[in-house]
Structures are given as C-alpha cells and as structure tokens.
Image (tube, rainbow, N blue to C red; front, side, top):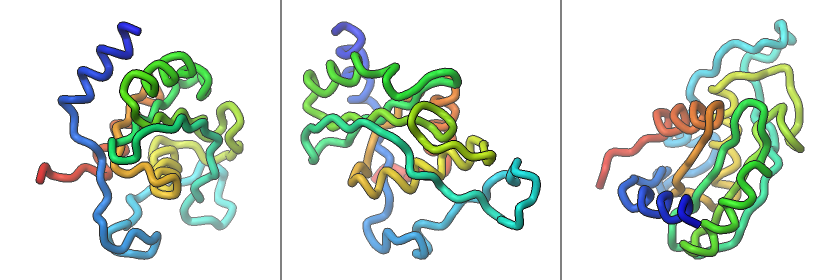
Length: 158
C-alpha cells in the first residue's frame, strides 16, 4: 500500500506521454517511425522488424486520467506487477496496464530484439487500447524501454 501511495505522489509531478490529436494513423507524418536497429535475424530481406501483438493485462479505471503502464525487467513478465497494479488501480482510479515484452511471458517470440523495436511494440499497442496519454513505469529492461519511448514521443509542456 505504501509503495502505491509513493508512486501516486510521484505521478503528480510527471508529464504524461501524448500523441498529437490529428492524424493518428501509421502513415501520418505525426506518427513517423523512429529508425530501428538492424535486425538480428540475419537478413531475411525484411528492412525493418515489425511490431508484435503483445500480451497484456488491463485493469479498468477512469478514462479521463492518464493510464499507468508497468514494464517488467529482463527475466520478468507482466505478472511481476500484479499486486502493485491492482493496488494502484484501486487507490488512484486509473487504468493500469501490465505488458509482456516481446520474447517474454505470453507475448510472441521473434529473432528481432532491440530496445527500439520494444518501444515500437508499445507505440503500436498504446493507441490501439486508447491509453494515450499515459505514464510509463519500468524496471531494468522495462525502464530502458520506457526511457526510449519517452525520448521518441516526448512533447514539450503546453
């Protein structure tokens, strides 16, 4: 409970990740892709790895508040955050999403693995679920993915 209160306190001081409201399609200029590291698959003719449909758990909450996204570490999965996600959703009324990164848990496996493609997986998933804007919290590998996502999608304060 105390950890949930501390996290709620920290969230009051953070900016939410936002996409521009106009043209939210994959082919719109405002949704331009960030270059992705070369594929580790050994050159199958594919220039850019494709995002995968990630496995996730979404706890319901107030849609007017930015959702909170929890990203696990290297040897983890989305269930690592079950307890804190439930407590956080109950205490704050926010939607809370826990996600299995590619090649982890119940998400599909692929030879393509980089922080860039893991960030791209999230950039595809979050708008599909209506979770933009959101606050992203990550541990270890998830923290690095969250930082890259923030750098790729940061917006200046209004």
